[in-house]
Image 1 (tube, rainbow, N blue to C red):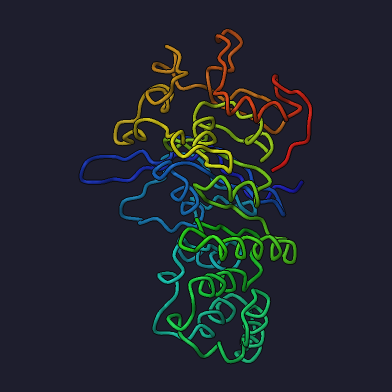
Image 2: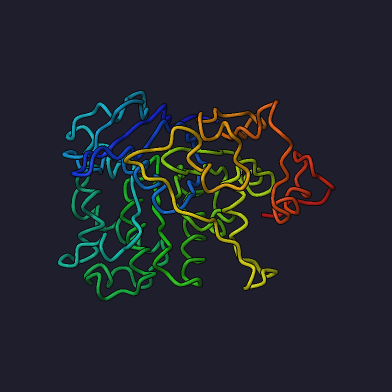
Length: 353
C-alpha cells in the first residue's frame, strides 16, 4: 500500500504558566492511501493534539515542536511556514471537527461556506463553484440542495449541520480527512447515518481518514487499523481485529473491558481506576503503571519499547518481554481472544467486528 503520511518521533509541548506540558511524547505512525486509521484513548491522551499538529492548528505562542517529523508529499509539515500550510489546509488535508455548530459561521449562508475552499484552492469561477457545492450537498444526502444553499446554519438540524461540515471538508477532494470525534454531539441514529456516509464517501473519492474517537463501538465499524493512545504516546497499534480480539497492552484491556454490550450486567460495568498522568511531570516508566493491576517493577522505572506481536501489530508493554511473567488478561478479554487465530487462547470460530 502507498504510504501517504508519516509521523516520526513526534514530540510537542505547551508552554503554560504552570510549566511545560509534554503533550506528545514520541508518537510514530503511518497512514496509507485509502485506509481509515482510528486513534482511540481517554480524554487527555493526546489524540486531538496529535491530529491538530498535522494541520498546524495549535496556538503558535504556546505550542512547540520539540522533536520529530510529519512527512506529507515529501515535506515536513512541522517546518512549513503558515502561508505554505494555508495551501495544504482544506485542499490536501481537511478536518471535520467535533461540534458542527461551532465549525460553521452563523453569519454566512452555507452555500458561501462550501464554495469558499473551492474558490481559494481551485482555479474555477463562482458559477462552477456553486454547481460543485450543490453536488456536494446532494452527495452528503441533503434534500433540496439548491434551496438550502441560501440558508444559515441555525436553520439545520445537528445531523444536517454535520453533513454540511463534511461537504466543506470534501470540497477539494483531500488526500487526508481528519475526523475529530465527528459524531459525539449526535444521537445514536444520526451517528450511524453519518458513519455510513463517511464510509461511502471514502470509497468514492479514495481519501485516507484519521478518525479520532473514545467510542470503541464506532471504531469497530469504521477502522482498518487502530492506534491506542495514553499519556501522550501510542501504546498499541494494529488492525482492528488485532486490537479488538488479540489486545496486548493492559490499557487496551481496560478500554475493551469498559465497553458495555448486550450481555453486560449494569452493576458490573468495569471502569479503569485512577486518572491519566499529569504531563507537566510525566512518569519516567510506563505512564499507565499506577493504574494497572498488571504492572511490573520495571514499569515504574523504564518506559517499555514496542514489541512485535505480528507484522501489523505492536504493543509497548513489558509484559511482552521474553523474561516477563505469564500474566492472564481479564476474563472478558480472554473470551474475545479465543476467536482470534493469532491469539494464544484461540479455540476456533469466526472473528466478527
